Image (cartoon, rainbow, N blue to C red; front, side, top):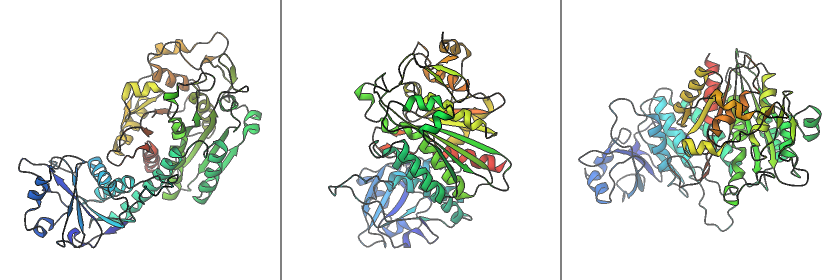
Length: 492
């Protein structure tokens, strides 16, 4: 990513991306496209209207310039109606992303969208970079086009260069998270994920400690061991650490990392299993966030726990009615082996509490009930502290990651009672099961520690068509939210 401070129409590039607003008189150029209409002899709106382009949000039209500009093609992207005040940053991100998704196979492109402030320049940059993401590792037939070679943002705003560096860091780690989520489980199992964390984490300046299955058993991590014992690929717990000499606060992130979830002996239906390579999206988000915290040099202490296991049925798998002895010391009766994510998280949460953090945030593709309640794009946020819940929702919204605060109704706790253990891993009724999962996790948070739980079962993996800067497949959801939390606590 580079910054271009010249007038957009004079930039030599293979594609010029320009924003347009929808008006009753037809599409009109947005700021950032100075001189563009004159280059088309004042007929640009007429040309766009002729091809059916109105300027609606994320609408795209490609127009050849026939030598009118140094760029051979203009990509018009809709921004919707012009705002009364400042531009909504998410509108800019999505417009840049929608346009960048059309650039595969293009050598270079310039984003000449509204970027009058550093914040706007960063929004355009990160939207463009995330929209240009492609995952072609397993393509062998030559159909997949290479991503755009070079992407620039046209802006003269004060602080834009630093904003673009920040955007590049965030987009880089989100791209890595997407790669991990998209990687098939045959190539990403707990041990392999741990190896990647060790190599990439060390390069980024993180401390990386890995517990293998023997050490997990020895140290009492019964939740992680129980979930992973049915697989020939044993579980791992990875601790990532970052410290800063000026830090006054510590944040702890815990990620669910089920590299493939068959449901165990409580086997999933086939239709629910084909995208379960994404069940490690929480751990991937935590990994990406810790990398960004280190690369940005934030004045905050941060720890991340990747709770890694493969949930498989076999003769050695945990059984419904088994009782697990977890790291917290509490026992759990396993009623359903497909409610496994919460079992690995409770070990990670209990271990993270020993770091004496100012808050713990766990992130997980935890329940199908999240999708039922909030859909595919909105994560549910639960917490033992109302202010923290709303803070996480606010930070997510500022990053363009949709999240909604959810309650933890006390009456649901009774449904988790077990006749043989301290608690059961599932309530007998399906109603409110996203909330019951949050209540289960809360039971393992020590008193006095502020904790929030983010259920992103839907947002982590896009099974539909691409939109904005979101591709099909792994999305990297909540990674930027975690980075935003670290930045907020660095600021404090």
